[in-house]
Length: 416
Ligand SMILES: [Zn+2]
Image (tube, rainbow, N blue to C red; front, side, top):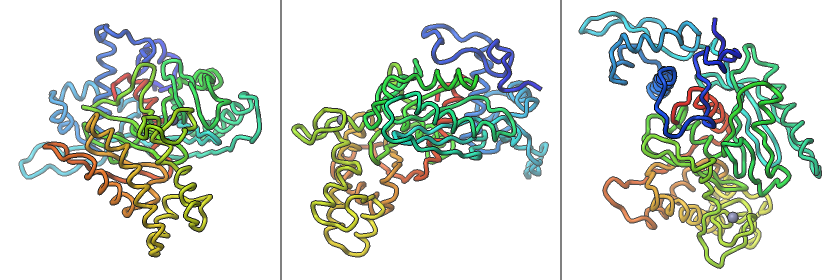
C-alpha cells in the first residue's frame, strides 16, 4: 500500500507531488502530474463541502462524468484515504444503489500544533476532523534561550506523534504573531519576543522528518472553519479572533487571502484611533488597544467591577445578566469597539459573513447581538451586503483542525 508519508512522495511517487507552495513557479502551466493532484484536491474539497457523497453526486457537483470521477477516486480508495460507506437504496427513479464516499478512519492523520505566546498544544487530526492524542505544555517563565522553548515544543509534538497508531503525514502549525509562510519562520510575537525570527517550521521538519507548514493562527482558524465548521461551502467569509491579541483572516471568492510571504491579516494593528493608546507593537491607536482583554480589564478596573484583573467576555456577560448596570454599559462599549474594526473590514472587503473566535465567544448571544447592532449602525446597508455574525469555536479546535488543513492543502497544492 502506498503510504502518505513514504519518502517516494517527495519523488512524486505517492498521491501528492513534490510541489510545495515554496517552489511552485508563479507563471508555470500545470504539469500533467499536478493536474492529477489538483483534481484530487478538488474532490477532497467537494467532500468537505458536501459530506459523504456518492460518485454520481460528486460527478454532478464537479461537472465531469462518472468515469473521470472514478479515475480520480479509485487510487484514494486503494490507498485507504477514502472509504465507501453502506449502500443507500436507489431512489424511486431506479438506478444502482449509491455508496457514499467519505474519509477512512484508517487514513494517516496529520499532526496539528497550536503555538501561543506562553504555551503549545498538539494533537492528531484525522481527515474527518477528529482530534486525538492531545498534548499540552507551558513555556517556562524567564528563559532567555529560544532553544529551551523549542525543546518544549518538540517534546509536546513528539508525545503526540508517539501516540499515533499510523504515522502522521505531516505537521501543521498555527502560530500567534506574524509569520513568514515561505520561510516557515516566526517574524515577530509581541507577547513573546524570544520567538522573533525563529524558523519553527524548518526546525520541526528537520527534527521529525515530516513536511511541515506554518501559518498565522487566525488563518488556521479560517481553514478549520472552511473545512469543518461554519465556513463550509461558503465563497466569502472572514474570521476575527479576540483575546489577549486580535487577528483575522479572509476567504474571498473561494480563496484564502494570503499576502506575499503570508503577510496580511494583522487586523489587530489596523488603526482605529488616531492619537489613541499605545499598542504592544509600539504604534498608536491599533484596534487591538480597544478590543482585547487588556482594554476590557483596565476599563473594568476603572469602574470597580468585581474580578476586573481577570475579566473575560464570559464574566462580563454574566455580570450584565445579573443586571449590574455598569457591566451592561461596559459590555456595550466593548461590543462597539469590536464592531468598529469589523466595520472597517466589511467596508474594505465585504466578507458579509464573519465568524467570531476566542474570548468574544464567551460573551455569548448577548455580546454578539450588541456587536451586530453597532455594526449595522456603522456600515450602511447595500444590496448583497447583508452582514451576518456567527460564534465560532471557543476551544481552539478550529485552529488545530485548520493547522491540519494547512498541511493537506500544501501536500495537495490546491488553493484553499
Ligand atoms: Zn499594534
